[in-house]
Length: 503
Image (cartoon, rainbow, N blue to C red; front, side):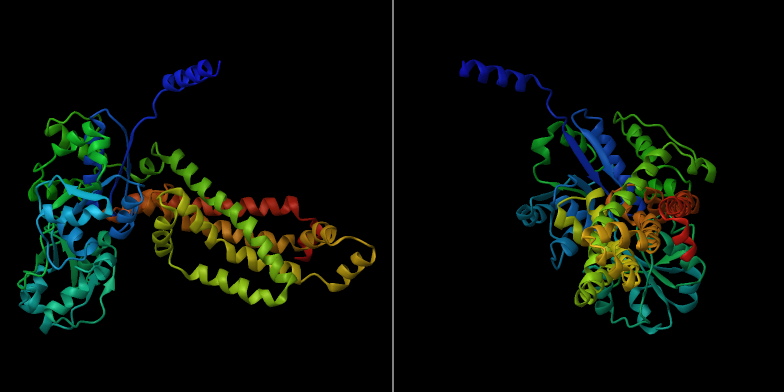
């Protein structure tokens, strides 16, 4: 009988459909990485072996690498110079075989050279470079008046500004950190004089920039490759076969042209990738899109999905913050010596930069997406709730509490029936503040694939596309106002009229 039961269970398990294989593709937060990520995702999807998702614009190298190492993504486009200098901390860029030998202990590998070299460089307005006689990076040494505007990642990378300044003996005024997508506008408007660029940037000609010669040979080659988890080829062999067919297909001119389609023509990343793959005789299914106006961008088909993701993230985090913050505020009110500690910890959390906290939570949670974003928003929402709970409880007249105890009411009853109702206006004000702040802060979560309206804002920053920025920012602003109004209505329903008048 037992053997028959075991046989039936095994047969039922065997008859269940196997879980669909998945491939998570990542990309960094700049145009070229978005496009290459779409090319990878669509080429992999054409193999028909796995469900493929593209986690767009996950941030800088550290964030995307953490996502790869923890298994949140399986593959993303990277550059040999970045792998050598930034990831492996090597003094030079060895051949791909040597890179893979050093990547192996990390469970990673690099392969499929795409065919172009997107190296770093410095650029100036061509007219200024000619007038000042600046043609090489070494010429900058005698022009300390020039203002540098460098991307935040370049400022912090091992192969970026610190090493460049040492190599060339540069000592200008402290460089300004500026998003790469906005740097071209800044130099065109005369706000900065020198920016870091990529050699395949589409805007070099549009903005009339001169590329300064790297006469000391500081920057290594940044050949585009696929960086992936080492088990990927064995796990998804058909997908891997489709990806290897991308090798050598994209030269420098082609990559500049693809970037220009996004940055100068306003085309969608997926459409650019689909068109290019179609030209390469790779079977994909995607439709081209034309540039759209603000209204079309606002009410685009992704509006409902982005709204759901944004609201879920905000209110799930707010509920968790209330569950943690109200007891902490009660603790601070009941045990006065604990108040400085409680306020100190929640205050310090509030000062941590959002991107730094997200980067820390990715390896801690072992994933990207909504979970680390939820934790970060929960922590950021604590301070107003804790502070207002404490203030609301401590401002209740002591005589009222003494009268309640004299009537023989238990402490729990006093808390629920007297203290919390009296503190409700102040407590709700703290919750409302946290909710409104979280609506705005949740946009940063798009950098780690958590979705929401931040997706549009991040894309707009990468492309310096004002319409895309507004299509994300306007719904967030409206949502913040609606949340404010919603909490005002809740307060009218929950707080008795007498307390509202007193408040």
